[in-house]
Amino acid sequence: MTGFVPLELAVLRAIFDETPEFVEQLQQQLAKVIVLERENTGQGFLTTMSVSDDLDAIQGPLALGFAVYVKIGGLKQSLGVALLLKKGLLHQLDFYSCVGESTNGLNISEVKFELTEAPFGE
Image (cartoon, rainbow, N blue to C red; front, side, top):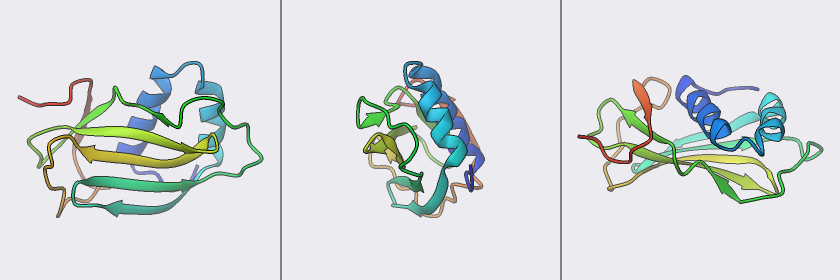
C-alpha cells in the first residue's frame, strides 16, 4: 500500500468493516494499491488509485461506503464518502459535500477529522 493519508486509511477501514462479504478481497487489493492522484474538487476530495488487475476482482456493486461520513475541521457539515470500483478493483475514493459546502483551501493530508454515521452536523 503506497501513499494514503490518515483520513483515507480511516475511511477505507470503515468501509471495509461495513462490507464483510468483500473484506478479504479489499484487504488484498489495499496491500497492493498505489495512489496515483489526489484532488481537492472544491466540493470534496477525490483520490485515484491503481491496483494490479491480476488480483481477485469483487463481483458486486460498483460503489461501496455510503454509510460512512467524515466531520472535517473547517467545515460545518460532514462529507459523504464513496469507494468506487472499476472492474471490481479499487479505483477512486470520493469525499463529497452533502450540501455543497466548499473544501477550497483545505488539504486532505492535514485536516483534523472524525468518522461519523450521520451526514449532517449539529
